[in-house]
Length: 334
Image 1 (cartoon, rainbow, N blue to C red):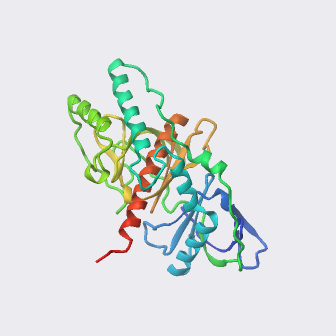
Image 2 (cartoon, rainbow, N blue to C red):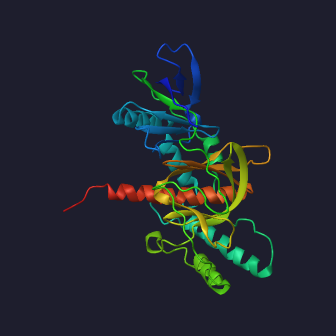
Image 3 (cartoon, helix red, strand yellow):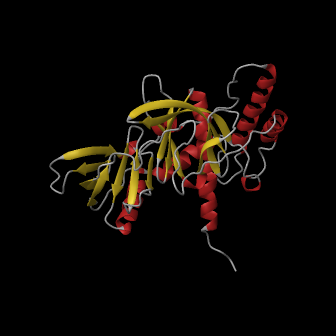
């Protein structure tokens, strides 16, 4: 259960300091800005906390509640600016096969098309999963290579607020019957599996029609594959192998690749970001975190290549959404 405590937050050029109080004599946490992967507004599913925002690093997450909405907005904007969050995202996207967030992601589409076509061929031949035909730049390599620009700050921003080091919602159990259901964030559906012939046709369609604009094909599969999901049941952390399917408007989780019945469907509009995180154990090394408005989900890929493909797909779709938002918010000529 999340325990909230009052803290005193101080932003410096290179790091954030979390103190017990304004005396700054007891440091609780020191967060290097270079380690921040996301800074975003969050929602409390229990609606008890207001003006909540999160700080996400590869090693842990921090949840903060400001006194007012204006304070929260100011902190998020200031921290994102000093941590160069948006600049880093654009650098990674420019380094990806698409090369341009305003373009058609030709490189990424070609990579996924070739990969899915190879999967179809291997399925016919009965072989194992193939190697990717075109690598996608991983987020971790971009993070290691980026250079930080520090701007002089005329004053040292500081503020007293509430802090919680835990998730707003505890990890839900992906059971065989009823997986986590969060109002407004996910829904559970019962879908019958299509015949084998239909599945083959759909797979061929996904591999051959990657150039169709996303808005014209909301059911198009952007990425799919097995991921290990970290769940918590009765305080015990467990890993469960699940089948994850990313589409333009949803992220669906199934028990297996037969896709008989989704155990969780998360609207993509509720996904804030997807980032690589530190290994969660000696054997779970290729880990990522899907940051949602109410809850974050931690996964582990079965290999580095699969992690790169998964992150690349999510980042490309997030970039499309971001660019679409810029266009929608732009000036309108009469």
